[in-house]
Image 1 (spheres, rainbow, N blue to C red):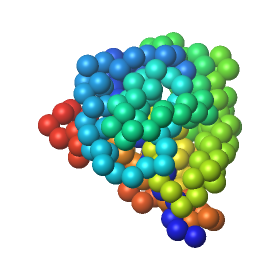
Image 2: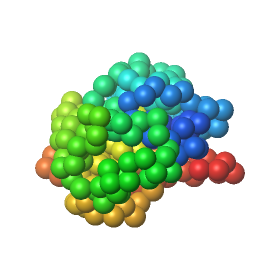
Image 3: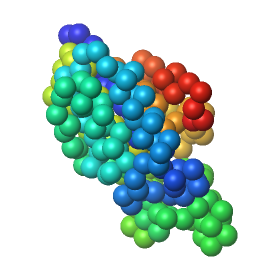
Image 4: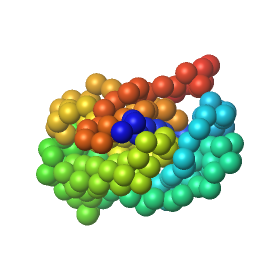
Length: 208
């Protein structure tokens, strides 16, 4: 069986990214830099062969994916399971605000306690991982031997890297999750692997 490649791209920048404000499932649009990042990402992928273009249903992902689908001449397929982690009561708050108002919950989030459900109905890392690995298998099975693009979110990409590399959910993160980064995951029919991660060369001279 030939290698299946899943190209996961984080959405472009939003004002809330810049302010270090938790977005989660709140629908925040790209800012001007994010729109330029989306344009450059599409230009980078122009002319390459892909079987499909997928996106989370959230606006910042769709705004990033739309120009990619256009340059590739493919329809944009919405996959809600690519959505960002639900951060519950954290959504809309900055890190400083959470440290001040919810120090215990914020520390448990920082400690990456796998089964800790964020207050206000947020997802645990265990629940997020289960959702993400199911979606990865779904895409790999649907497009066996092909290459597809999927635009998603930072929390999802964190889980994808850990699934593909074998890194534990509670291990410290020492890999990048930059906006509009290109991240290549392989599937050989049995295992996922990280082929390339955090490529932002197409964003040269932009602050990432």
